[in-house]
Each structure stands twice: as structure tokens, then as C-alpha cells.
Length: 339
Ligand code: NCD
Image (cartoon, rainbow, N blue to C red; front, side, top):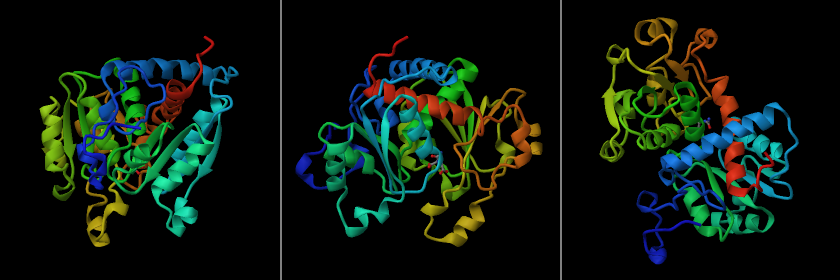
């Protein structure tokens, strides 16, 4: 359910050219496909709702705003956190889930098209959360769905909007603003979909600067660099640790995305190009720089860092992921909150 700028009969799907339906402060019944759908008002509404969700969760107040609704989780790519965080969010609000991990084992393995799968699940469910290895699949699902909201839980190297929403919420809770920030993002800038969504979110606010630290071959696509810069985000690409600024408010570390490499020896060479260690932190971070990572981490953060109070990846980000996903489900499908 989104507006496609290409003629529908072009038969060719170009995610870069599509126009997603904007949220404009009203989430009801809408797809969540890209951070490009958001403006600052919509983000603020989501954050305010997430605050309420924290309260609901912590006080274990009985809540049934999704009662009678069934939400499908169709995951064609491995996931533990995102999958269980969505499932928990739905259940916390009194909804039920139809859960499929490893979708290739099901009808997809028999060659069913995505469109058919979506149409079938539409008959059983009130929303469909989908993760898929190909860019643009969530958008394709949204086009196939007649009136069931589709939520993108990661489309290949495209976007991962709900991760970015929880990351933005985490930064917002720490600094009480999302403008005038300096960030360092490290790792697989080219293939990291969480980064692609997060940059879109940061571009909505004034005066943000992002240092992008990666090996030469894992830099952001040139067209993305231009597009974000045009939106007013200041991006500074660096390739050496010595170039890390000492002024960053946020460090956002990421994993080199092994599954996106065709040449695994190349992956082996790059996977630990940058490791977050205590000496690195000591040298370049501020006393209150927050340390974030979407997880899973595979050796790019020294476990010594976990004890540091600035490390938010195993605590705040995971918690906030639940609240933000509860808030999204509430805003898209929920009945009025009895608050
Ligand atoms: C991320 C993803 O799937 O893109 N994981 C997640 O959902 N938190 C990050 C990653 O896999 O590196």
C-alpha cells in the first residue's frame, strides 16, 4: 500500500525511484518501509508513545489494544533480536502472532511468488512484518498487499527502519535532541542497512555531522553520499583510526556484513579492520560519548567495553527496541490507550 512513482505496468521494480507514503504524524494503517516516510513530527509522536510503552511494560499494566489482531512475522533471513522483539511487542499489547523464521523452508521453497504469499497472509492477518535478503522486497510486498500494513524488518542491504527508530530514540533519550550532534559510524557503511536508515533519520534534523569510518571498499554508495549531503547532513569519510574526531557524541559501530560478500577472502581481510577497544575509547571518545551497535557483533567490539557505562548496545538499545516496536504497533493498529 504505497504510491509508486513508476507506471505500475512497467514490470520493473526500482526501489530507488519509489515514493513511500509519508506518515505525517498519522501512522494508522500505514506501511513502514523506509525512514524517508518520516518527518520530525512523526518521530516525536513515536518517541512519546514509546515512553508510554516503557511505562506499560514496567508496570505490567494489562493492555489489550491489539486484542483480536493477528500479526505475521515472515522472516526469509536469520534474526533473533528483531524477530523476538517484534513478537514480544505484539504480545505485550494483547495481539497474537503467526511466526515464520527461515521462510525458505515453506511454500517459498516450492517457488511461490512473494506476491502470492503476501495475498495469502493478508487473509489471516492485520499486519505483516517481513525480512528478506533482497533490497525492495518490503516495498514489493506493500504493493502486493491491498490493505494490510507491511513493516520492513530489513530488506537486504537496503534499509532497516525499525532498528534506526530505536537507535534514534536511544540517542534522543540520552541527549534530549537529535540535532547539532556529531557521530562516528564505523564498519560496513556500504552494506549496513541499519546505517542507511539511521542516516536518513539524522538528515531530518539540523546541523548533524557524521564521520564514516570504513575500509575503502566499504564506503557509502556515491549516490547515497550525494543524496544525504543534499539533505543537509554533513558526512566526512575517513579510513584510518587516527582520523577519528575527539568530539563525537555517539559512536555507532557495526559488523562487516559477511552475507553480502561474494568473495569470502575479501571478507576475512576486512572483517576486523576496526575494533572498538579500551585504548581507542581512551584516546578518541569523550567522557559521555555513547557507544552503540545494532548487534550481532562478531569480534569488532572488545568485550572489555561492555562494562563501560557508556556502552548501550546490550542494554538501552535492546530495551528501547521493544518500546519502539510496541509504539509502532500501537500507532499503526492499536485502539486508544486507556491512559
Ligand atoms: C542488523 C541487521 O539485521 O541488519 N541486525 C539487527 O537487526 N539488529 C545488523 C546486522 O545484522 O549486522
